[in-house]
Image (cartoon, rainbow, N blue to C red; front, side, top):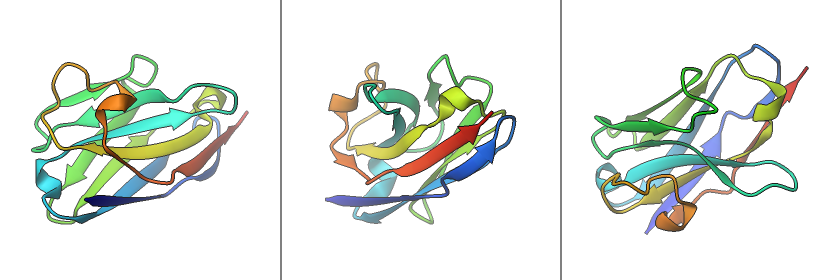
Length: 126
């Protein structure tokens, strides 16, 4: 069992930056693939980024590639999402998720993740 708590969301102007954090409690955090997803009002939850258990492999949605960076600190049981050059279309509730398996080929599918946080709101004003 893994519990996830996101933080770091807020209101930022277009072009600004935010860093989200996801603190995990429970066993074997360093064996989990971690992901970030987001959901805007009226839209489906979408994949943002994923990172392998070691941090050696990362994956990004095309919409955030080059602007967002996912990282993890296994000693602190924490995964991060650094978001630069934010745009209004990045406005959403951002969720952290964990899956007890390798990053694999279906890292983008929410159904592959067993544990979820409650989300942190990111609002980007134009």
